[in-house]
Image (cartoon, rainbow, N blue to C red; front, side, top):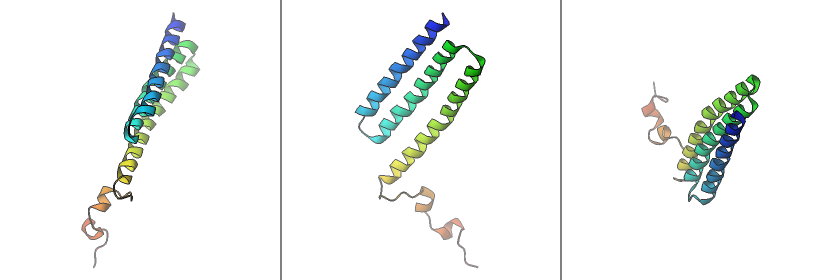
Amino acid sequence: MSATLGWLICGLALIILLIAALGVYRLPDALARQHAATKAATLGVTLFALGIGLLAWDAAWTWRLLLLVAILFAALPLASHALGRAAASAQGDGIAEPESLADSSPAEDGFLRER
């Protein structure tokens, strides 16, 4: 029973990843493609790890798969956010500058004060 459920979950993960690949191919801009890839990768790989965990049913593999899912939950949103900010700032003047440095002078921030 768990083997059948494991294969069904792996098949569902495969379908989600294929739909995400279609979205990456068909969506109009980089930010939309990145969103589709990140969300689907998180859901698809998590489901795939769950399916493999049901198929393997071994404590050593279960801990490894849980560690993989935890790393993905931590890394994918952070990487997506960083890439999105870089793409958004590069669309402006062609020079990527953080907002805090672009809007104020160094003297206003207190970095360079004359004595």
